[in-house]
Length: 375
Ligand code: NAD
Image (cartoon, rainbow, N blue to C red; front, side, top):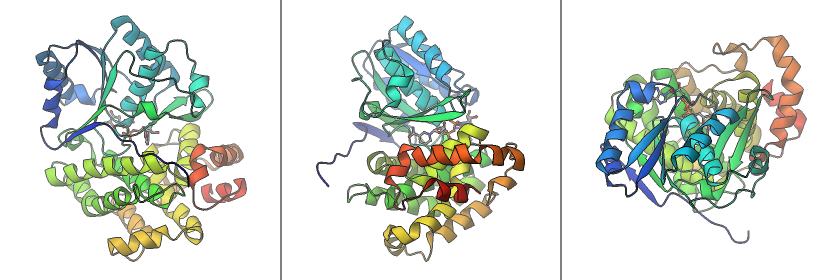
């Protein structure tokens, strides 16, 4: 297999109260990046600002990062960073805020690069010449706080671009379970199934190794044991803590083993229809496992260790328990009219086939297989 590597953030603080670690940061100026108003509304933004102040760090706020963050949001944030000259980027919020902050950081470090140039794998210049990066997730889902990935959307072209650069792995991740406690049930469900999908795709990836399998399997175990409780009892600290850790563990697995066809397809249906990332993953996952099973013994390997009969059945059970539909046509959050679906099906299937995540999928689909799975 040749030389491989395993990278994760240098420091991960986790457990109740870990947000307080912000008060121990050494630096002078921080750019805080966040999404809509949830972090403000629940008081986490004020806490973060106060803790940084205690550390003698002045801060600016770059807020308003939208779900599925756009190239223009990234450019707006990079400009604000260049004017303030921070030595820390502090990203607090869901995966969208964390992802946008990562790419703002890239443009702050290197104003000369273009968005087109960094989409190419291996093209990112080195980071940390101006600032280091701290990630504080408020959803238990994307694991952007751990990963070398960011997903940025071009809304005009209806395309979500995965950007991959080892240097984008944050320096510090803070996993404080009080943040995800404020998630409403449907966001808990969608983001929780994103964790399940990361862990399952990392386990079955053709780039999985003995370094990544234990994280993937433990993440699946934690999701099966804790997601239903986190969904039904949002203030259950143990379930929230376990889901937050499951997300990070799945992140450690997939940032090093990569993903598979579910993600290739979710990126494209997310770009075309705006469907929430975790929801798209949850709907697609059982079908892609069924397609892949003939090409991989890793599902059976995982099922044996976890003591379960069939992973797809467990996933379908979880989806049903949390009101996640079994096909896109039954999905009420966006317009899945038959006409529009058929119009974009060819393009979506070809683009998904060409997505970098398809490279590590255990089954080797052709564009028609992808079309059949979408349908
Ligand atoms: P999100 O960040 O888009 O947030 C979804 C909604 O939840 C928003 O309205 C947000 O304001 C709200 N929210 C977040 N935290 C909350 C809280 N604690 N309480 C109440 N409301 C809260 O959702 P996400 O699923 O975390 O991120 C999705 C994005 O991440 C997508 O763009 C996806 O493509 C990307 N992604 C990135 C990676 C990676 O490795 N970087 C992996 C998977 C997905």
